[in-house]
Length: 187
Image 1 (tube, rainbow, N blue to C red):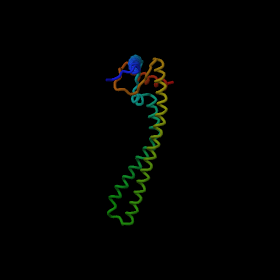
Image 2 (image 1 turned 180 degrees about the vertical axis):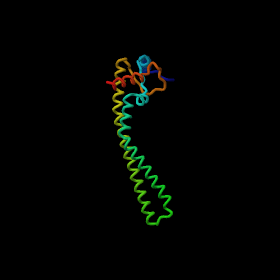
Image 3 (image 1 turned 135 degrees about the horizontal axis):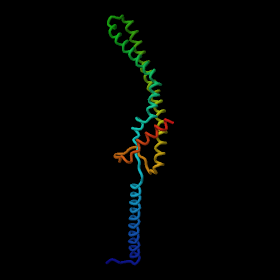
Image 4 (image 1 turned 45 degrees about the vertical axis):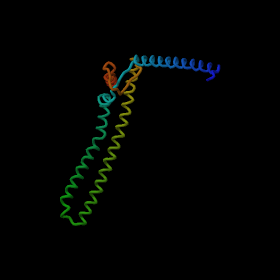
């Protein structure tokens, strides 16, 4: 025979009231989440294809031209050094069988040193080029971000994305950003 204690009945009632309150709280929270989700979906969203802007924009083309002009001489010099080294290796391979041992070792040592110097020059060139590319990219990104923010403010957009699985063409701002960058470059 189980005894029913009056206080356990009160505890059970309080527990039930708590459970009902908890359910209502959860439903309210869910309702708010649904409202927030509806608000988000009603939000104004834009998209910018950053890769396209970085390839096609007028400032990107100017930067590319600057880099090509700045590094073309070094690139040609590097190509000439590479061709000279390859020619020296070919000549050594042809002459090596008939060379005296001391002369062959001396030329081989010179080729090894020439190869090291060539590799060092190529690394230096690549490092300098990458550094300048990054500097130009940072300048370009400042301009792109300003253009995107200006368009977003004008259009009263809530979000502007640069990566998406699908973009409705009416939300694509890329052409407008390109035009804005072009007109800013013309000024």
